[in-house]
Image 1 (cartoon, helix red, strand yellow):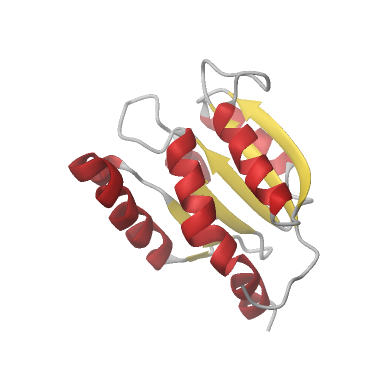
Image 2: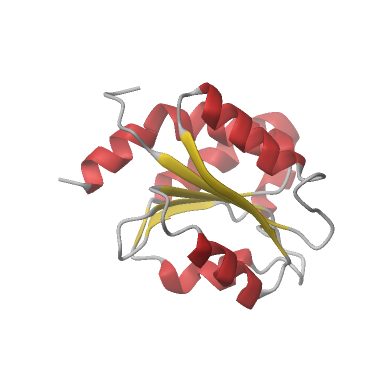
Length: 158
């Protein structure tokens, strides 16, 4: 990791069945972030509905980084990508590609159905969009997000 900054993380879980107590993925992201000395701004759970996803996202705009999980597959109810796509000012293409490669090494060809991505908003918020699986969230946090989060923020602030 490069030089540390004092960063806050907003965590948004998208699920029709989870709440804050049963949200293992959001809990995993928060635990890993806290262990890496990142501050949790807030953690929310919203239904897999575009308006709810956007409302949850908007409530986290006070954070430096927003990490979502859930709703990134190809089921008809998976609308996270569609809800957040209008907010993409600059996509970080390598994130999704590397995530799917690492996932492929763990789960095989099912990884092609993941629409995980990372991007910056027009207001320079760094956003990571992850699947809802706790294992996928742990993989993304440990192998991609934590090693690069400070570098990405510093580059964007130049």
